[in-house]
Image 1 (cartoon, one colour):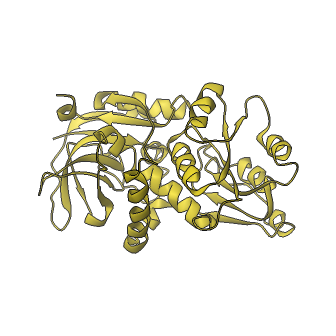
Image 2 (cartoon, rainbow, N blue to C red; image 1 turned 135 degrees about the vertical axis):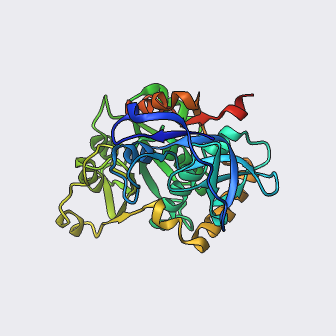
Image 3 (cartoon, rainbow, N blue to C red; image 1 turned 90 degrees about the vertical axis):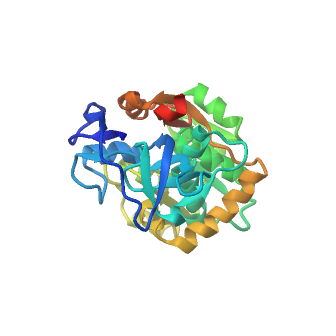
Length: 320
């Protein structure tokens, strides 16, 4: 079968479409893949910087949409690697039915982004009684950012989002973002102080790392929380724990790789996400669709911050 293979450690240039052996089902379920969603974690895996990733060569990708071989039903799923292939083997508790009316592209754009965003609200304590809460969402025009805005709209959250593009921010405002901050024009820490009259926000969804973790803490009001779920800058989070004392604030880590092994938690999250999706309140924003031969281009779109919403890879059978 054909697959996108990480041939060695490195950047997008290490990706090649190759013939590889088909996976064995064993106790897992086989899915014939139609499309796969590209994530920043995939870029880190290629570089060798994502924990738990085997040494190359290995098949890239961690989320997909396709047809389950055993019953012919369309499903979307999550795995640690191996998703960008014609066939993928997946655990049953990490496969979900594709909502009615959704394309394979939408299904491939759902698992990582929407579960991460949902669990970020869960870690924030905002799934219940969040009507007066304020949340700052970094990289708001990306996959997780656009998912977080849609969920925040359902929850009644007052949302502030950062991006370097007015065009991207306008698109996300259509999804429900109330306060758009172009960090290329104004420091987002200053913008938060201005927009909240010096009070700050209750929660920051932080996936940049480096100095941004410290800046995000300074954006909080009393008893606020920073939810850290990535390091897109390539730098580990920088902050002085002493900065938390004066506000009674806290920093929480969120790693979908770890939480996805908690079957009960994932099922609880899916029940609510599925209900919202069925009501038409959630739908992945797919910005770019490329054939698997253009996987390197897809990775570069994320690296260069050129994507709005999700970048999706399309497989040959899907294109036929």
